[in-house]
Image (cartoon, rainbow, N blue to C red; front, side, top):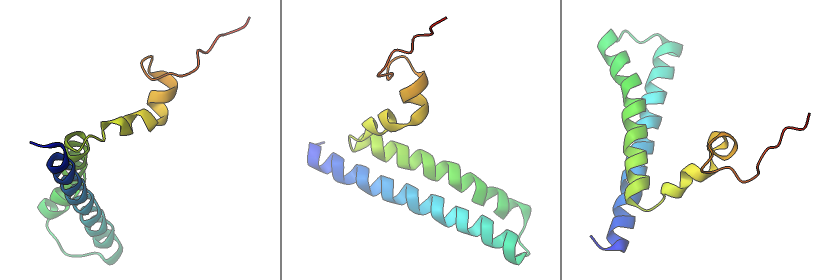
Amino acid sequence: MRRKKAFILGNIFMGLGMMAMLISLAYVLLSHIFSFSESEFLAGAALMGLFVGALIWLGGASLGGREQVTDKYWWLKNYDERYRRKKQHKHS
C-alpha cells in the first residue's frame, strides 16, 4: 500500500474509532442521566464500544504512521527508559 493511501486509511480508522468512543460514551452517560429502560446487554455493549473504539483508533494511528503519538504520553516520557529525556540523579 502506498504511503498516501495508508495515511488516508489510517485517518479514516482514527475517525471511526473516535466516533465509536464518543457515541458509546454519550449512550452510557445519557442512559444514566435519563434512566433509559435498556437491558444490561446494551449497557455492557456500550461500555465495550469504548474499548473497541480505542483499539480502532490505535490501529489507525499505527497504520497511518502516527505511532509517535506514544512519545507524548506523560508516563512514557517520565518512567520508561526508552523515552526518558533527562536522567534523574538522586543526590544523597
